[in-house]
Amino acid sequence: MPRPPDLQRRHELLEALIGTAGDEGVGGRSLREIADAVGTSHRVLLHHFGSRQGLLLAIVEEVERRQAALLATLPKDPADAVAAMWEALRRPELRPLERLFFECYARGAQGEAPFDRMLPGAVESWLAEVEGVSRRVDPVVVRLTLAIVRGLLLDLVGTDDEAGVDATMAYFVEMLRADLGRLLTP
Image (cartoon, rainbow, N blue to C red; front, side, top):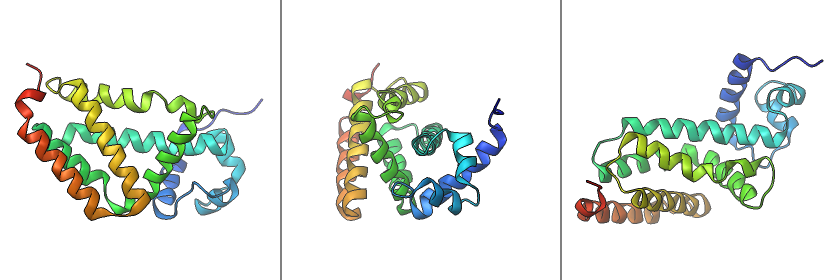
């Protein structure tokens, strides 16, 4: 009978995998190449993550969890919060991880297991996280903001047009600021 994965070792591997994914990317690499990059064997990765796809999904889920944790640290003003979150997400060192997110998300949208388990949670979890931090913002505005942030991130990873996406986000933040009274729930 195989022994269950050691949760501490899995966490250590996940930390190394996130570092490698952020530095070099992992989406197009074989499981053996990924294992070599983090100083372990492909069998150890299989033991802890089940498959290459499970490993990719674990990376995405952990990065999403960390990004959601940022919500509690953001300014209370919704427009300022969106601007601060954008600054945190648009950093160049996150591009490989964002590319991986979009790769996994697209595969999930096609119904490919195990990526399909990302959906619809990749939207619903963010809506719930924001509601947990601020019940004052209309859920429609939260969904719109999530769509705009993800759309601009996809644009950014595809084009590297930092000036263009930053200008677009600045415009959106100003729209939020100008219409804030109407966008907040009582």
